[in-house]
Image 1 (cartoon, rainbow, N blue to C red):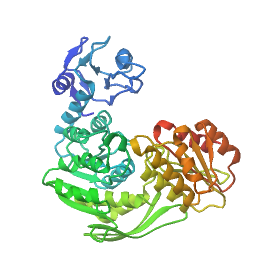
Image 2 (cartoon, helix red, strand yellow; image 1 turned 90 degrees about the vertical axis):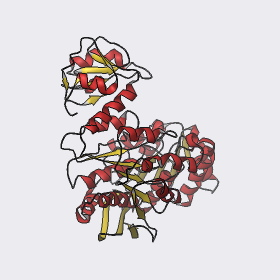
Image 3 (tube, helix red, strand yellow; image 1 turned 45 degrees about the vertical axis):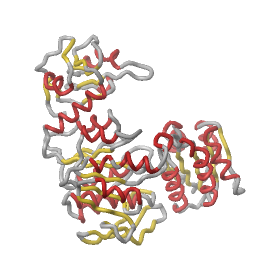
Image 4 (cartoon, rainbow, N blue to C red; image 1 turned 180 degrees about the vertical axis):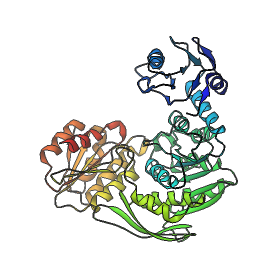
Length: 456
């Protein structure tokens, strides 16, 4: 973090110094939520968790080198006590950005693809200068400000994901890190259990473009009517991308190689380019176009951006992360999260991957779909069967409708109780040249199947 004395942090967060904290001590190390990650100069944010209370580890953080803790009650350590740790962390992130007025914030949201596109945005903007775009999906009231605090005085761009669990969440995050460029990828069926309809999802996602300044830029998917309609909700200039003939940054001639890596022509107001991605999955063509459109809005040159997206590989774990074993078995680990849209995109990528053996799909439950849960899972089973997946393994009782959907077409399917049983089955029966695709919502921990197969 940029160096800040404790008295300034206390003022920014509305807190008070306790435990003998020296107001002039400077925090110049990372802000951390885990006391085990504390190093010299750190600020440890003590958060009550489901099983442990961070305040109980404040003293350990200080021994590891932290200057102080930030929490909601006194502990046996120097610290800053605030009313709400999450709100205080957000205020600290906002204070850091206020001290970096020339740092540009680029935000991305959408129902699917946020993290992959954030990684591509990071690859694009680093071509123009120092950029913050950490691996993973730090997109909530804790993760977003933590990302912001990693900015340094020379940071030119901070790339952030803006996640939403309900109306107003993105709006709140934009008060911490006001974006200058905002990318909206899609409005899908993820989180329907929380929002109720795609229209309500769109209302929440559009809060990102509503926060843009008049001299900012909204990057909108021309192929999604609910996203394209967000142009009416922003003061910023609008740049669209997609396959639509009306798109400002237009994809055409989209194909895939034998490893399901997209190849396409990109036509832009600043020229045309052929793009050959290293990322697996046709859906990354749209993600790359969005990232390049954002770069064009910022005045970046096209050729270096194309080179950057072409060389980009999976950076955040469990997202179309492809591993090839010595025996030729290919494991596609896409088990970080799942929605009907991303599940179908992954299955389509699997069918495009050339193989001398069988195509396996190991699928678990998709969460937060509300009343659409059973139908959405059933439809995925039908789709998997229709796409011609050779071996379908359905994991856990909550994913049973996937098996029912596949079985309704006459396809063969195997159901197992949990990830360990799935790993046992696939490890026992997988053969040379097979491709194994693994996907479910993160709560299912199905990435353990991929980890075990990769290590076999």
